[in-house]
Image (cartoon, rainbow, N blue to C red; front, side, top):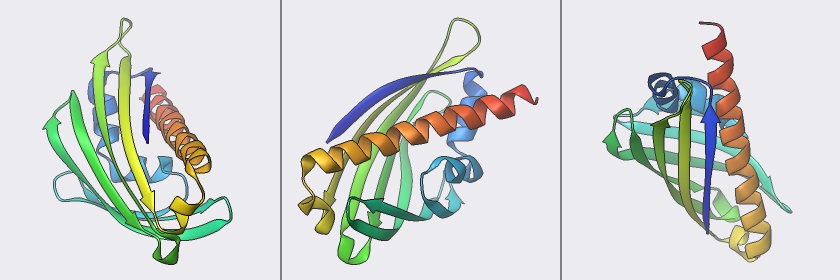
Length: 152
């Protein structure tokens, strides 16, 4: 499945880039994230609890960054395993461009797939859930960045 979108964030590109690479910000924005450690150079490891339809699972996974073009873009690659619930794999290409008023336009292109019990739920449920999670992440990311930018 593929998901794309944009967010206009009221902060300069350097600030948005710093938050995209900060474990604390990412942990606060990933729905169900209980733990996130690591850094952009070595990658991140995460523990995320989610309920997708009737399937409830704790996913343990890793995220790595590639094609880093600071502070403009990068590819993010992730994989999580949820035991009998199955697995989720995905990647995102994230780009940042300067807006007209000192703000930043964040654009994302996400590709994801699931397997195991999750895949048995059907495309409609999985696609709806994935869209909801991506939207929640970027909405929360925008709020965190803008709130911290106001206090500077």
